[in-house]
Image (cartoon, rainbow, N blue to C red; front, side):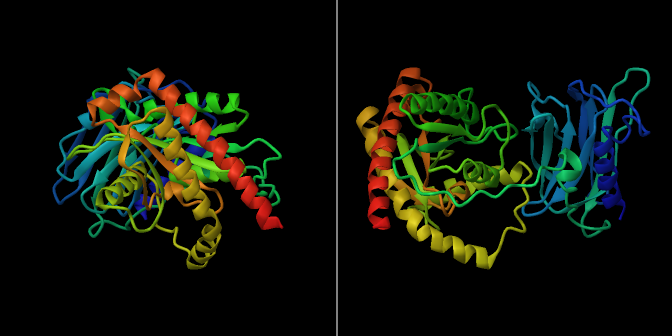
Length: 414
């Protein structure tokens, strides 16, 4: 139970505005200034018996929480007011049991450090002592293999214990299908963000590029009389299921997810529009969907309790209406992009099991605007003129699709 008590202690400390080792007593002044990691004064080492020791230098103590997740096994540390910008978490080396290290923003005021482990680990101890002479702090964690330490994966404290109790949700009546009597409402989802930068090539980060394009597309939609909503408008991490929740809360008519992937092997070029299917169009599409979901997992998302057979059946029933509309939307966007930018992937409309497309009641597509691994695509994607033409093609497609979709809805009502 020692590992669990460590997490509970962190949760209580966060509730009162201080972290273990940062104040030591209730009533201490909460810390608000941004702390910085000191990777030169940090280490990640293997211990005898198969354990791991993490020592992370910080410019000052901060509230934090620690927990572990499985499938894949990960150690997750959330910090309040730690700024990872300009720091390379990959510099934390020294343990053969750590496959990768990620760090970055997870939500406003909070950042996250994630260690992907080679095998399940259990948290043994966590403390953040402060040096009274310098005011600096050090996060010290120890883990042991799960079969030799008490407990296994430690679930994080409830979100409400950390970030405030939300107001009770007021349930609105079910949204009516768009019939042309109001502005079309489109949720634009710039892929990745924060701790998850997405693909990177030649100094270009997918998360940054797609946020830029999403903002430009939102402006183009607004000028055309279409109402745009962004799932993120900053370099922050938004979990996949939260992106869908944002679309549902906005009562969206359409969900567009924007990406620009990179291939480790082979060559591909041009834009592709994806719709949802449990059976991928090809093996490359299947790998792409797995990689997108894995990025979210490695950022510390726990999807272990998401299986609900009854809910799945109901969602499949809802998709019998939504999926054909998504397919028609994808074909319209393919035609719009072809007319405005010309260059598309050899098979421009494909399908795969992207989790971000699984809303049962909102027509949803994922647009791979190009491949960062292609020098030609990179040149196009960083060009404001090319992006403006691509946005114009998407706007034209949405207007034409919405008109045809509203006409089909009118026939159904009759």
